[in-house]
Length: 512
Image 1 (cartoon, rainbow, N blue to C red):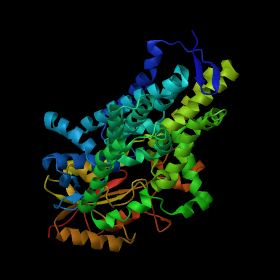
Image 2: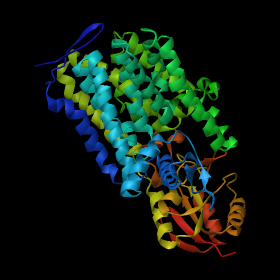
Image 3: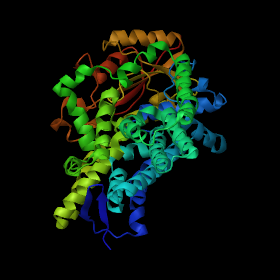
Image 4: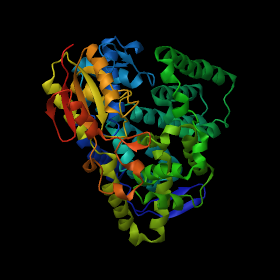
């Protein structure tokens, strides 16, 4: 029996999808099928910097007795380097699994996968209640087959958990509006606080909907008091405590990355290239933009609030336009609008249903491998360091093969995957002499090896020449290409090569 997809404005048209349990489970099966291959792999997808940071944080967090002071990574020689982004809710959950089963990347990835499956379930339930089964099914399938979803579904990082909590906050808001009980208010506060602590950026696109939803019924003084004491104050207290844990110099970058930033970016046409690629390609698989435009036809207040949330997110969170995985926060809203459009397009020409699905799959086949690519260079360099260095050896890391993770800074990927400690280069110059001066300083502090990587054209996907240079993995410094191979060749004149790969080398440092 066909299902009618409806909203406040009326019917979209027959969806011709059987209302069977099998179809309802299809998004979960699709997500599992697409995400499982990465579940057992090391954390070497494009978010490997964040994943290896979170893994190292979790290991050290557990070792410190689950104290936030233990949220450290191993890029400061033998001295722990504290990096605190969010309240360690995710690290705490994974840390319990570490205590029971031992530390392994698998447990963090599993928590993310279960959270993403839960997020899909809550999302479908919300969509079903408002727009009907047909829209819910399509929206769920779009989320499950979205490259950004797959990128985070098995990521060792808190994004999937935060998305689940953010969607639970919407579910709680619906329950509060249906029945304004104190218990439902408590559910809403708990979900909001959990999402804000896990990763507050996932809540930002939902602010317009949450704000509008709280206008009626308006909470009374008792609810407001509980909200301030039980919700706002704990979050503010955490932010203050985090400020005490972190280096003030690092906190200074928060405003640039997570609070408005340079608003002049919206006046530069070049700014729009990458967000368009992220949203149109990595979220919409190329065809999704057409579906979204069709979905805005006859849109009601709620749909426009969801779209406004996407715009608000890009304004308030500047890094969302640069870091591809930050697009996860807007995937549900865009998936809903795309599903509405898909229903309309199917109703207009039922014979094109398979062609529409094939267009999405074709886009996924092109953009998926790029979005989900594995950083084999980092892994190979780390495995070589693990094999050829002693467990107590300190290493100096010079990673110059992927602009996406930057050179040096807070990237612990190689030392974490190698199970070593050491330092990253402070890439203030691409002059080999300046880099060698840093190496010598670290050698005097105990460094025994240099682990260096460099870029070469085969590391880019085949379609990179068709895109602006910002999409190449080739690193840049001061607006010029970093010739990592030449830098390593210069260093080899002073330090013998211990082992060399296609895009990496281990250089042995003489003892002090």
